[in-house]
Image (tube, rainbow, N blue to C red; front, top):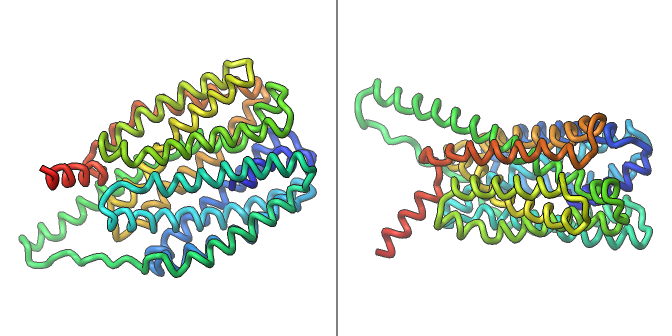
Length: 385
């Protein structure tokens, strides 16, 4: 994904489209990802991550080169739709697998997994900057990254967990009416919780998607930075996310998921406001860093809460939250692109400030008892004492 992001300016120039047209085409990337998530979520619950994750990784690597080969808006549209589908399948299946690993591990580790995703963004920024400076065509570096991804997906397959087994509900406890009513109530509350988590994921990932697709263009077009320097805007954002996610699990164990979501969203609001209003390149880098640091721990907490809400349907629930989140991923770039018809690109980022503030205010949803990390924290504290 990072390789695609850092090559967006070059692909946009090759195809000959405007920012607004690019924003519309990015809708197809999110639409494909949403569809892939819904398919892969159910397949992961049914077949297990050991089969679905490597398949998604191979397909994602194989289709990465397609946007780099596009020559007109129509071929770019098809390439983004296919690549989005494969990326969505990989995304939801590996997150569902991470939920089961976290449960078995006994302490918060979801943010650590997401940190490796951010490491990929940092590496892509470095490689992309080097490729741009060397005059290498986007298709060449995208193809090379795709091959590496395929090798990693195949090499990791045997180390993945088999399909998770879930113990059946104990029989003979209470009346028949109570036995039937309790699961129904639990199912309704779980569905309501998952829907609310999905709305928060939409807002958080809307912000993240905007940073992915517009950070490099912001430095290049608004602040007049060279292409090589502009590529580091996304790298700064991704590096800050990596650092935040490496630290987030320890902070979650100590303060709980709600605090990470609330304070993280507030920090992101400050960062993107600096980006929107700052006239200097150094200020933009500071803003993108704060934006990435603040958002870093938000998505892992939402995915983890969704997966732990019902371990038997972790894949389906994560696909719902991640799916609506990817609607945000597609809506963010598209809306920002649409807003550039009326205001400068940097002023359009004020919308992201509003999204972050809304998320911070609504973070109390993680106080509902679905916060598995908080529960494990209490258990570990009791065992120490």
